[in-house]
Image (cartoon, rainbow, N blue to C red):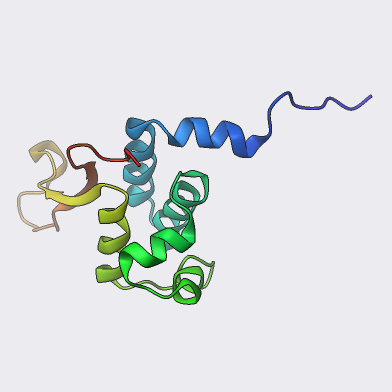
Length: 125
């Protein structure tokens, strides 16, 4: 006998991604991954499970719907400007901060670490 879940997975993800802290945590963890696609895959999941549909997101970011679908695909390669526009619509922004001194080597300069944070009233759609 197969076990049938009481709630669809998409519905569970929607509940999780309705929580602003969960979204921010997911995106920040994906930024730490060595693979570029991790962040974009996470961002796509947030969009897919969020309350803003892709047509509305395309309109608000001034992108065509086809272009938005293409950049959110596995082979998509959005520009920084496009990512910033999407984050803006979601009520999020990038923030650059220095790494803690304990993780920096004194002889080599390393790039500052970026993170995503919510703007005031973010994810209230």
